Amino acid sequence: MPFHLTLTITTPFLLPSPIAFETALHVCSAFQEGIPVVAIDTPVNVFEILCKSPSWITDDDTWKAVVSSFPNSSSGYALQIRDAVSRRRAEGHHFILLFAVRDGRVHLLTL
Image 1: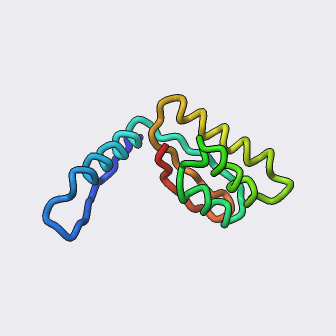
Image 2: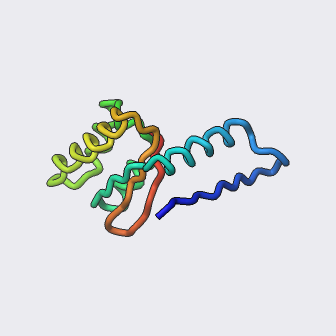
């Protein structure tokens, strides 16, 4: 089944900014090429922390703060999430979709 994505950029100005337009084109291209999805089963607050910034993927200090928000029994699972996202980044992907299994939310994460 072909995938169709419609791009609409709304700004208070007549023309979208070049950055917004270029980013939108990159997102459309990523979807057409097959954007990876990483499904995670975390508490809502942890999912929100992961969505705030992708710095947890490469910065160890940020990662320590993220891990501390996981339930104590889930530190191994936290590392699995980081590894899965890191692998997608190493494969050359610029975006992934984080899918929250518990509440069905989706977040486009820029790598």
